[in-house]
Length: 99
Image (cartoon, rainbow, N blue to C red; front, side, top):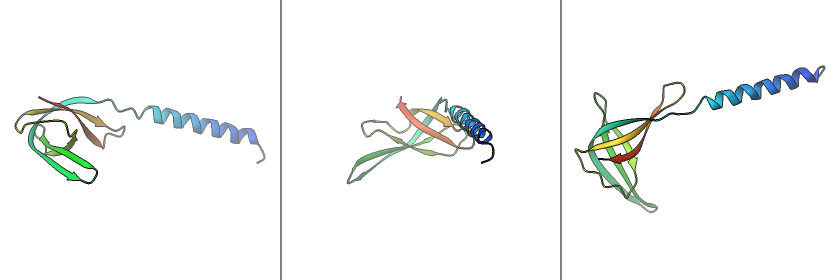
C-alpha cells in the first residue's frame, strides 16, 4: 500500500455507488385487476395455504398466494400489486383483495 489515500478514496467511492444502486432498487407497485379462474387450497403440517389462479387480459394464467382467511369466488375479480424489478425482467404479483 504505497498510497493509502488512493485505496481509501476508492473504498468510499465504491460504498457511495453501492448506496445509490440499492436506493434505485425500490419497487413501485402498480395495481392491476385480474379475473379469477380457480381457487385451490392445500393443507400441510404447518397450516393451510390458499392459491388463486388468475388471468389478466391477453396473458397466460398465473398463480398467486392469498391469505387463508380470504374467500374469493371463481369468476370474480382480484386486485393485485404488480411489482417489477429495476431491470424490468422479473415481475411478481401480490394479492390485495377480491371483489
